[in-house]
Image 1 (cartoon, rainbow over the protein chains, first blue to last red):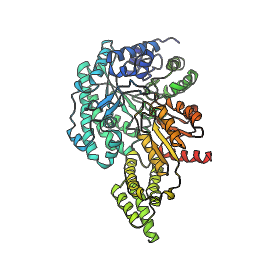
Image 2 (image 1 turned 30 degrees about the horizontal axis):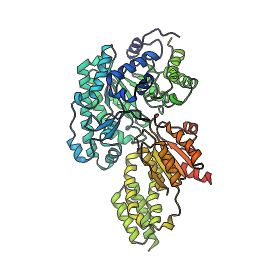
Image 3 (image 1 turned 60 degrees about the horizontal axis):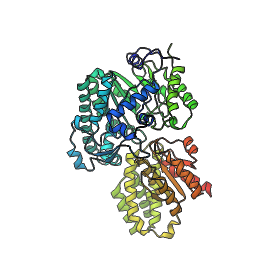
Length: 356
Length: 217
């Protein structure tokens, strides 16, 4: 079935609470854009211009509705003075921290909130956002979550162990990280204007596979609330929140976040495939948009027909969300996903996701 | 030595590991040696027993990785004190596991937890670390005559090396048990890859290894 709206019109309708012609598709594509362009994966993260062009061509080729963005899970390490490695070697999929900037308690005391325009990947993210902005697309910036940044700054094992052994030190670091996230957000908002920006937050270290709900409440929630409140107060209307991996046990805190922020703005929730769509709709659906969560590795090894079946199921359940739904994978599209399986998302949205 | 004292020391050692109390673990390990408790027994019936409880609590959602990391510090401290006193005949011949994170992947928390749980279950672990080339897995399994090759991956770009290693091992070291695990893996994918076993987490890994070894016999 032919589309009746452009991607911009479709996303605009969704965000403003109107019915789009069909379910929008946001395949959470980063590395995959490099693969289909024959670009080294590292360039997607190291070179804003090449990254933007690759993502734009990929978007155009498949016809999906999301726009180019810059971000990765290892964020924070480089920004606070460590080093990262871009994924140019076999088997790598995203930037990885090669030297953590904080390896001692004293280093936490010495941590300074970096100037966003000079910090690590900040200038690359800004350049890509400028290219988006020039074409009328949202400038997307990364603003969380704190524990994932902290793991990239001090190393995951050290962080997790210190949460028990040296909680005060961890809190000291988290506070500085939140300050940086706010400063980084302010930089984007003052550059483009809040109405032209979309915030992106999320990360795997907050997952219930690693930390308990109590630890989430103690070490994540206060800082997440502070950052989100500030970003919303800046006037940013849309926040894409990606609680990565299994975060079912953290859902009460995400809901509390929305309640304490007065359900201000519009969130797009993109939980991992472990979280049933029905749960998300029940907790957030009256106000926010639910981003569907098809199992990401399946795009790499399952057939077109199998992906269509997974998408169909996701669409049929997701369309019950009263405030809107986007067909998405439950995390980043695998860089080596089969192109026909990204196409399967489009076919499914057009075939099963049309609104009357 | 009174049986009661021995039981108290072993139980105290297990509790110290569960609580992640490194100092207590060290002092009780030293006390075990001083009281003439067999070092291997102190590890298996004390520290490792505590670690098994930790594993069960992780599986049931009562404990999480921060606590496990503290428990591991306590367990490794006990092993550091006790290991030099182990009489080799007491151990028998532990099963060998070659363990590592596949090429291109530097996420090793999961692998380290698997190592911990397997060590607590009495396995001899040859830890190849992370970003391990296929050839290194295969060569080490052959040179060490390992019983199990266990591979971990957190990325969809690095998990693809698992079937290559499995295929090589089937040709060059048939009989080696292969196990896979990590974020993007599933039982379905593990089967597609031809792995003998899949563990959804570290707690499951020790059980799967035990089951596969029993099945092999």
